Length: 178
Image (cartoon, rainbow, N blue to C red):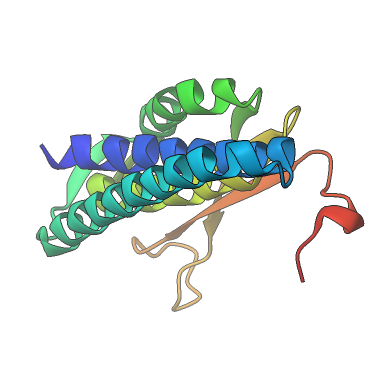
C-alpha cells in the first residue's frame, strides 16, 4: 500500500502542476474581458479548491510514509532505479521530458538498504525536476558510490549518492517572477 502512496504523490503533483499551468493560460487568454471574467473567476476558484484538496492528500501520504519503520532489505540497485524511472516516465512523457539513468562503474548491483525510503526520496527529486522542467528537457539520474565516512575503502558502510540533473532550455529572464 505504501508503494502506491509514492506513485500517487507524483501523480497528484503532476495534476496540480497541470492545473496551475491551465490557470495561467486562462488568465493570459481572457485578459480583462468583463463578460468572461466572472465565469473564469468561478472556475479558477474551483481549481484552487481542487489543488488545495490534492495538496492535502499529498501531506497525508507523506505522513504515512514518514511513519513507516525502516526496513533493511537486499535488493538490486539496477532494477530498483530502472523501475523508479519506468514509474515516472508516464508523467515525464506528458511534458515531453526524457528520463535517463546511469551508474558509476564500480557499484555492486546488490545492496542492503531501505528501498521504500530511497524510492520515496528519488521519486520526490525526479518529480520536482519534472515539474520545473520544460519541453525537450532531459533528466538524468546518476548513481555514485561515495567513500565510507570512516575513510576505509574496505568498509561495509558505503554511501550511495543519487544526483538528479535537469538539462534543457532555461526559463527566459522576462518570464521569471521576482
